[in-house]
Image (cartoon, rainbow, N blue to C red):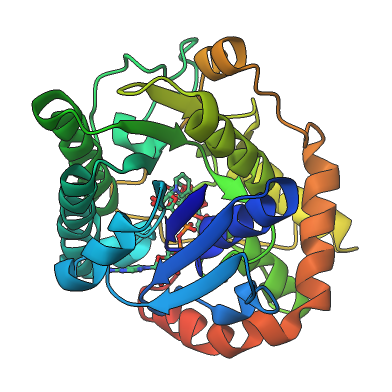
Length: 331
Ligand code: NAD
Ligand code: TDX
C-alpha cells in the first residue's frame, strides 16, 4: 500500500512510520507542517524508495488533494496535541484539528481513499477515581478542554462523512502514549529531562490524576491492525490496561534514574484537569486479535529513559523554551 501519514514528524506519527517501514512492505509519504512539535530528526535516515517527506499544512486543500489521490490510505495523526497549549491559545487547535481534518476527508471522499483517523480517549471526558467502569466505544462524548473538544469535533466529522458520503473510514481513540520521540512539553519526557538537568520534577495539583499508559509501539501495531483488518465505519478503542496516577509515574521515573522517590514538587493545577482516563480495549482484542507487547511498564519506562539519555541532541533544542512557557504559568 501507498500510505499518506499526516503528522509523521510528531511523536506518535514518527513511531508509526518506523513501525510500518520495519514490519511491512508499505510505502510511506509523510505530510507534516513542522510546527514547534514536529522534528525531522525523528525521521532521519528514512528517505529512500519506500519513504518521502512533504512539508505542508493539512488545511491546504491544493496541496492535500493530489497527495490523497495518490495514496491507497491516509493515516491521520496531525494535530495540535497539548492540553496546556490549548488553554492558552485555542485557535490553532480549531484550525488544524477541525479544518485540517475537514480538508483531508473532503479529499478522501473525492478520490475514494481509505481513511484512518487517530484520536484520543479524552473525547469521553473523565471518570471518577473509584468508578468501576472504563471507556468503551459506546461511551457518550463529553470533552473537557479546547484540545479534546476539537478532537471530539474531528471524530464527529469523520463519522458524518462515513454516514452521509460513504467515506471508507475507521477511527481509533487511544490512551496516553509514552516512548521515544515525545516532545519535552509532555509529562513523562518533561520529568525525565528535568532529572537529567538536575531539576526536580513538577506534578500538577495533588498528582492523583490517573492516566492509562500505553507504549507508542503498541499504539502503532493496533493502528496497523485496524487499517488492514478493521471494519469500515467502526471505532476501536486502544489501551493496554496501564492505569497509574501521576505520583506513581514520577516516583518510578525518579527511582529508575537513581533519585529519592519523593524528590519532586507539587505545582499549580491545570485548569479543568481531567481526573482519570481508562480504556476497555475488548473490541480491538477480540475482533482483531491485537495484543500489546509492552506489558511491563517499568521496563518500557526504563527503555524510554535510556533513549532520552542517549538522544540529548534530539530534545535539547526544545527544552529551554518549553520550560520558559511553563514558568509563566507557575508550572
Ligand atoms: P505531536 O504534537 O507530537 O505531533 C503532531 C504533529 O503534527 C507534529 O509533527 C506537527 O508538526 C504536525 N502538525 C500539526 N499541525 C499540522 C498541520 N496543520 N498540518 C500538518 N502537520 C501538522 O502529537 P502526538 O502526541 O504525536 O499525537 C499525534 C496524534 O495522536 C494526535 O492526533 C493526537 O490527538 C493523537 N493522540 C495522542 C495521544 C498521546 O498520548 N500523545 C494519545 C491518543 C491520541
Ligand atoms: O509537568 C507536568 N506535570 C503534570 O503533573 C505535565 C506536563 C503534565 N502533568 C500531568 C497532567 C496529566 O494529568 O500529567 C498528566 C499527563 O499530562 P500530558 O502529558 O500533558 O498528557 P494529557 O493531558 O493526559 O494528554 C495526553 O494524552 C492524551 C496527550 O498530550 C494528548 O495528545 C492525548 O490525546
